[in-house]
Length: 106
Image 1 (cartoon, rainbow, N blue to C red):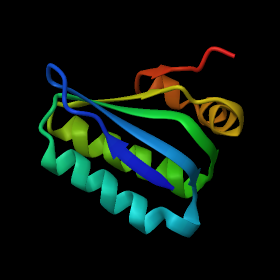
Image 2 (image 1 turned 90 degrees about the vertical axis):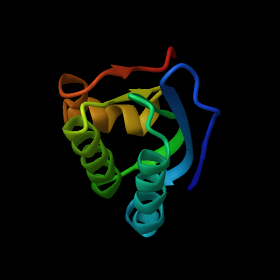
Image 3 (image 1 turned 135 degrees about the vertical axis):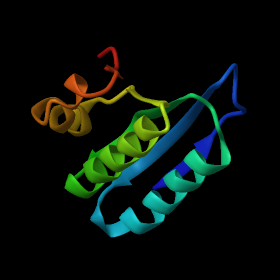
């Protein structure tokens, strides 16, 4: 799994994820997401999932953990671009009812 961020724009930071977001690499991913949230004080962090091929419960857990952390700090987390299996799981778990989600146009 690869993670990279853009240069913060007007209090907004986009973080791009690609690959599999699963139990095999969850420790690395969780640490990188924590660094993103700690190092950048943008009020809105966007996770672009358009290049995530697979997500499991560990990946969902990392997203929920980040959402709760940011929510406590009165910051927002938004998911964009999910498609295929990641979108199906996010819809099944109704993540879009708890946080802003913009689905990929397919």
